[in-house]
Amino acid sequence: MIGAEGFVKLLSMLLLAPLALAGCGPSPTIGLLEDHVDTSTRGNFVVCAHYRCTARYNVAMTDAEWAQVRAVFDPPAADAAAERQRIALAIGQIERIVGPKTSTVRDRPGATIITTRTIGQMDCIDESHNTSVYLHLMARDGLLKFHTVGQPIIRGHVIDRWFHNTATATDTATGMQWVIDSWFGANGEPADVVTAEAWLAGWEPEKFKTRTDR
Image (tube, rainbow, N blue to C red; front, side, top):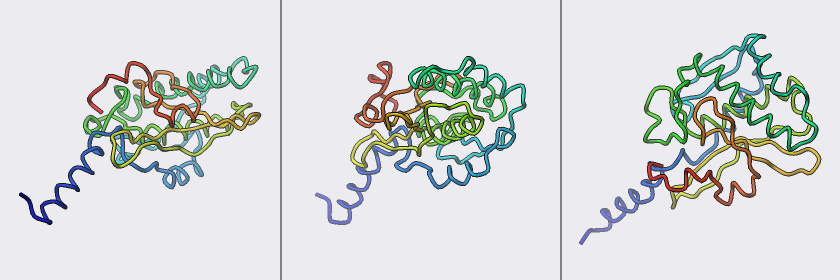
């Protein structure tokens, strides 16, 4: 039988254990993102890596590299749905360009607190920050005609293992919020795009529903 002090320690361990298994920590890096977005240009922007943005890389993309991103939007999307498809592809294109510059080229899909100690891995806080920055770069270049860039959002609770953060964009005509989630894919893969409502309710790709290393 344990005493009161032992019970408190045990309770703390039980509450903290889910965090060790979660996709990432419990707070999106909104303040950090705001600091970086204010000064971000395609010639100088910050890429986060190695869990909760503990590694930060100042990255520049050349005009030729950015032309590859613009090409994704050529011809321009006819509607918001088509633009979201282009956004998903453009996120992957930027990751393929940025990966070799930041040692994240081998970033595996769905990296967790357990796996992000590997050099080049990103958790969902890193991914949500980076994807948000990339969306702002697109918006500033006039590539987004049907969407505005939103703040990252979070789902999960301290008593479960589902903490997760993601970037967002809002359809300017309908006001519907969409998730632009790059965490589920490896470096360079298109981002997943789904309604924020579905994502907040626990959406994830079918391939992730049986994973046990989160």
